[in-house]
Length: 144
Image 1 (cartoon, rainbow, N blue to C red):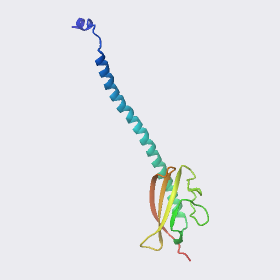
Image 2: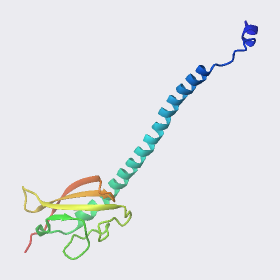
Image 3: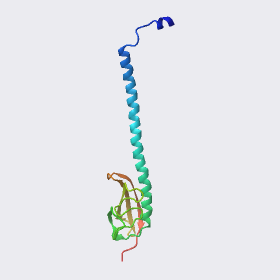
């Protein structure tokens, strides 16, 4: 039997080679597309983790800032006269520790209490895509 196999001089046909290449190509294409998807998911996840950490810092700053009921509105610039003072962001709204991310702060009236402001914080990337958001309630001093 072994001699019969060894004496076979036909070799491998072109059809068999093409079939093997097609099967190998299908496997490799699926394998490589998986790598590109994993790499893009890692970038998105990294952005979200950074944004979450930045929003925590900004939230602490907003909670420690003294605000009045006359500060309603949406803010994308800070630390200037008449604007909220938030130490973790620059005047332009970019974070001090990572200038690729911007803070957007919306202060609105809480319906059930005159002593509370609802502060909604958004962290956006340079393309304007919202990466993280949260809100908190802040006790405010009454305007005199």
